[in-house]
Length: 208
Image (tube, rainbow, N blue to C red; front, side, top):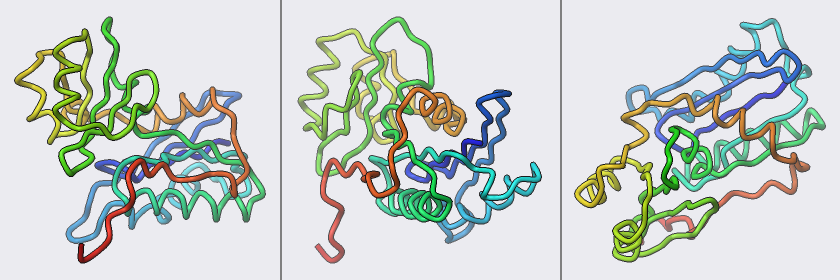
């Protein structure tokens, strides 16, 4: 059984799939009051397993989002994935949030994923991770090419005046657990100690 989860983006997404039967189930968790959605990750993993009469010992592989995204969310994904994989002696598949978002809609143009990297920079995916690039450079890239943009809300405000082929992923409200599941089937899993977070930029330092 494959367990997938993602706490790096706007919500917590948890998925369960069986390669043999292609069975899938998902739980989506939003922020609750002053509690960030990743705080509910472990309890909802327990709930989805219990719903299908499964135990942690039935999990054979874990797939998780490794970032970029919320630093709190990345830490939650990485910690839970590594601890579970170590205790269960199973492997993990790590997938970038940029790659996950690149699959949320079909298009004839090249998907270009843009997420706010702060400090006037943009996390960019075009068939692969291009890095954290100054916003002005990305604007020129969009003007010069034929792209279908997938963004977060802040990047939508910046790039929607440039192109009509753009959508904020929160507007589509996709089930990212299902997309993560599909991608992870095609990737090679690694040992828990070999999984590393995708911090394209250094984490913020509090007080600075």
